[in-house]
Length: 482
Image (cartoon, rainbow, N blue to C red; front, side, top):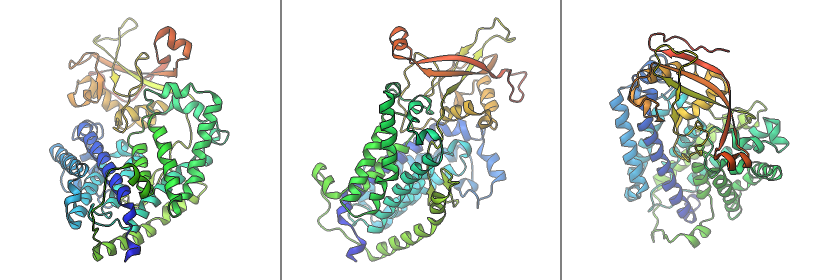
């Protein structure tokens, strides 16, 4: 049975399980803080309305059995408690069966949230967390020898994640092939961070180096993951470095953090032992039944990988696609196309009951997305600001907001406390405005000279009114002035 265990992967497993516990913790905290306003009973896209039209077989979730805002919050609190316990190392003290139950509950709770989360949970890092979280069930606590097949399943996930991202770029926007995409990406990405301005201002030659390094990592180096150590460790180390680079240049929720953690799991254990003051137990157990379960897992993953592999090989490759309602084995990818021009929605309110040409409008400030041109882009990742991300998509196409944008504006007219908590500030605090509207602006990063002269990070130009003015008395459908 020695072939089925890999004691040398003990530290890699330790790093991975601590890392994914932290990601789970962040994900459940985000769900607790934002869930009521986004998908609660009176949220922007209410779960009860979703459950009426979507059956269990299409979206398995505990909330098909019972829904209330209080029950949803309770599930989030259970997830927070269990992930915090795992992060603190308490899960490693459990017997194997207890370990499996703890991680299975975490996975089931988060699957339940994602499957009713609708557009707010339609991001690739949600399915990535679910797939990685399910594999964690079968890795075992610290006193058990890491199962070889379980650790290889993590490598297979990392391979598909990176290779899929590389292929979608080469099959997508031409700028990836001529190495110019990163001349735009740092400025137009959904939510820039404090260093994005500096990355955008790198020379065109360095942008091409960035792009080429990305291609080499995702299309060439990635195959090293499928080889024995130390080659797999070298490939994983390259991915850890590249994901760290992405972490400091943008805000992509926990996508880069979780990918980095997957990379740590594939590092050579001898390298980790040289830098981490941790020692495995003198005797690592290997229950036969647990190893048998790992074999069943490997067979299941192989079978469920058929759809994702076909998708990888297809010229019509789809990004971030699930092939089963449990989201066990998925396809990934990001930025098959890159936006050249950044547009932002600016939401404003007034206390004037009859808005006209002389009306004074004041802005709502969002937590993460650009608004005030003098405000430096903040750091939020690995936390996920779902409303801010969707506002970026609506700026690309108003169709992304068809199901919820007017409801959001109505909540602002009502000064709904849950909705206002999603924002950084409201122009009238907890008081109701008389009218709201949405304007569309073109944003770009300032030049170095503009930055020195004005202190502004952004320059913006008004384009048009997208919605409104919308008043409490005249609530209607999405409209604009064209």
